[in-house]
Length: 88
Image (tube, rainbow, N blue to C red; front, side, top):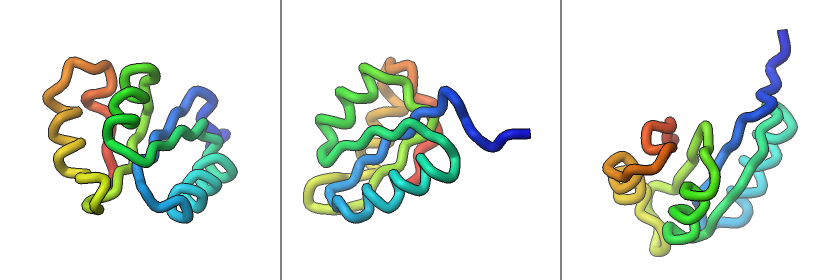
């Protein structure tokens, strides 16, 4: 049984480039995810519209991103990914 996810898409929303690179490399190399990332909530919303991530990682609270607000807005939206697991 393979642990690779051939069509698995991850979205990382974090202003910290170091955190993005560490998580991105782990998801790609260990689990085979295709990873997209964003430094802002606006860019993340656009990515959610254009792709359907299977998991979303979001920074909890920073000057640029409010993870709880983003998750609340995602859950209340009409996007296909509104029920996607969000890891804060």
